[in-house]
Length: 360
Image (tube, rainbow, N blue to C red; front, side, top):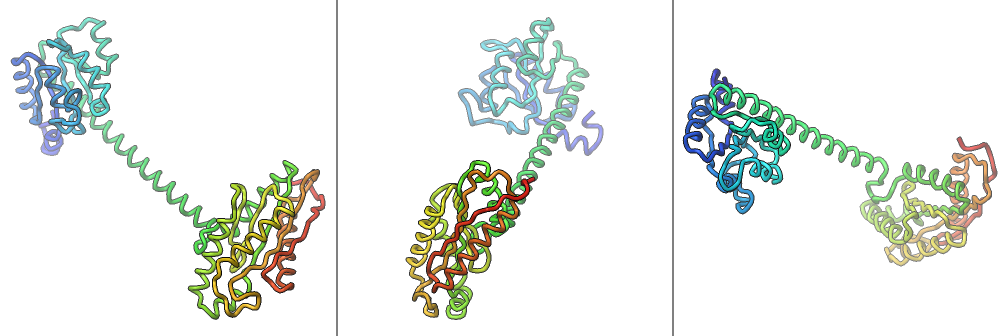
């Protein structure tokens, strides 16, 4: 029995049982059986109304007189006035706060139909009347043990779920850290490379245009030397934010390419459209009016931009990696020309990708 050893008795003293029976003598008898077996935490109800009041449901919703989470079992008489035990059982199982409490039916009715109804409505077991001490305690020991094991399993599952959620959040953070530039919060070069490959494949598949803009802050080394690296970082952050504002379409993509260089991918955009976006970027960054007294291009921070555009309509076979390299190199050449033309300007290069080996 549960009171056979000290550690078992300490565990039993946490057991909570509710006895529901309209006959006082039966309630007293069950109280004697249970207390003598080491179950002191007992509650009693003589009607459905009193049961609902103790559990804080129905008209007493939200005001339980017991700790429902710690209630291990309900011993429910089937035959009661006003509302029988089967209906009370049904209501307990429908209520979210009491639906998981094991309910054992106590009954003199052992016909198949009554027992089937009890189990169908959620009862876990039944005890016959007249109640015998040995049967009552054996059923209690078995049911309470199963219920405690169930609670422990659910606790472990909840702990595992919490651990998995934490792991997922950690992995998501690590993934973000691996693909997002910490200073500017723009995608980094790694994510840019992955995105450009994907967009070239998509443009080839759909026969669309694709444009790339590479931009560089004019005389940024001079800016850092004049204003300090902290102000240089702030300059990069403001420029990144402005780039994000310019990217109007969901498919447009801006990233930090490295140092003071940024890059923009414009899917489904021809050269004319890319030049419009590039010029808007140039004007908007100049419009930030960040002072740059050591620039030969303007008294404020400006950028030079190189634009490359490609039409993939009709291209059947193409080496994706080679195409990525060619597009980046074309925009880089255009950027170099922009710097050679005095900076704070936009220069373009239209690219004709040659067909190569089939993309595997």
